[in-house]
Image (cartoon, rainbow, N blue to C red; front, side, top):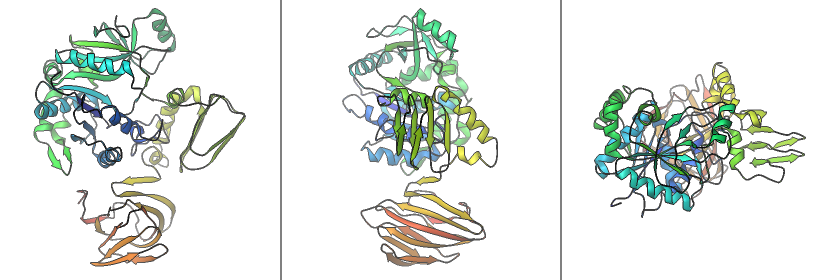
Length: 475
């Protein structure tokens, strides 16, 4: 190929099947589930070879823009662009918008590698060979999907019927098959000729847009309108909401791949999982001799075939088999590991009740482009938080109508601006911010700033923030 492949990373999903660690405000693609780095960061690393790939385009929810930028920076992966979806509309319009954008930026002959950001993939010789073959086929007008050779009867994936074989060439798709029940999955595994639908694609920008024009014209019109009326915001491209919202809420599989005559598949057998449930994390993780996967502060005694993960408390489990225990600082899930697909049902129950719906949406710790905060204690007319600010970062210049604040520095150095006057605080020093004052917190040091914030007042909601200046474009 004459041009590098353009990676398009889909990072806007809000799935909660890995609840309680994965939630709407910080979904699984941004969590380090299988190693030191998040799944999104691992995806970036797979497309880092500039001999093969151009800088990636990331398309994500507007709420995740700073997480995307920060995590890319952490792994030293410059991005070509970050496209921000104003509303959720599934993968068809997201990919169409990325194709239209890439065609304008990289040329109409650009070949795009469409990658979900939340998959666990092992890169080996088979993977690299498949990428090369798929790109060559896509440059000739085919829309190529990657079919994983199944290792067991899996009910959590869709399937592709094809004569494609491992190590072989790109082959035609006979048909796509919906997620089967257990009996049908076993039948297909025994019959052969079926592949797991990985959700990864290799497409020519022009070929894909031409198929959209024929098969999904409403989707294409929405995507092109959203690109043509997009606004630049810092390092992000905000797709136009009015145009984008006109798109049908439909996946690219239904809109294009199940209808097109140009669909092709390459069969691959590299390690792959969409990590769509806790039992998938268990299957793909490093397990001990008793077949236990653990993460975080965990102690086990006579436990087998289980997954125990904690991001806060120390979890001790004794005398159990086939158990999933996932502990966060404000919620704990316990269930049979073999029935981990049922987590989604539990999330629906929690979401249906006002008293628990927040547990599916936000973490006790909220992340911001400057750092973040954790809620420690809430009471009538007071709230206690732990704030952490990254070196060199500063919060917006702001004021509150209903609350005063007290800040106590626990670690690092703080520059505090109050009504134009700047005070520098070291560890164990504190300052009072009266109601209505114009203030700002910044970290001038080289280590993370940590402080305790005590809020007092008649209303303590996060929406009582009047931003006057903000380096992250939130005014």
